[in-house]
Image (tube, one colour):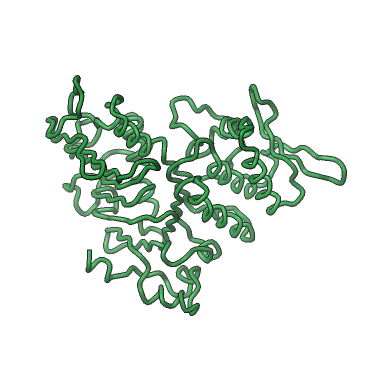
Length: 376
């Protein structure tokens, strides 16, 4: 689970630090930097997993730097936990001012108080405890396969993170997952493989039953969601109960909202589960009455071992389902994004039921707790 993420020098994020809980919801006006923050985490994940070749989708390097201080180096610092490891990991990387594929300026990884490695300007300041040490310069976290703690940290920061935004066409076309990060792809393009892994899991049939039960709350006629073939699936078939008979429809024939809802369930129940799941504006295209069902799935995921949840939303209906302590406010100050907890005044108003969480997006726009930034 991510405890804290600090981003500097990325688009509007000149220097932003966010603390996370099991569930964290980012809210703010359009254009304040919510997507920039999520994109920064996805940028780091892709850079560590794919290297410079995986960054083409993010655009030219100068456009990724802060508009106000382009001389500030881009850097990331992540504090995170992994189940079974007693101490937290802390990873930091500062990129070269010219960006990838140039060597990193600084990188280190800690486990608790132990520094596992540290490099700066193509030199080792703390070599990893190996007989054959890799050359410094490129990110080292993915090039030390013989130290299990480093491998675990690398996996948590790459395969352990899912960043999802589902378009209206989600779950309608079969796409290749070759060379992709394991698990459900960000756009759910490999949904057939993800569902194949779920339906093949005979050790835990409750997962299938739970997904069907959630879909039935959305549409009571649904009786099954299955692949047309286990060996070589080409489509997903949705069974609808009509009296004593079942009508089989292709998933592509279902509504956009249904497919988006189902895509979120696939992300939440994928095997193996992610450490952290990030969803951008999950309310898009989904019937407002179904948002309560989706919120329940988000809220129950961490305790059920299905991953930490981070959301961005513009939906008052969805936000009403979360506590003020789970909300982080995103504002734009000049050209710089700031992110912090809800103001104490608004927290008290919510606690006393004078204000509903959803009204932070309508009646009383969410404000950052300024005492937090003063004490930081």
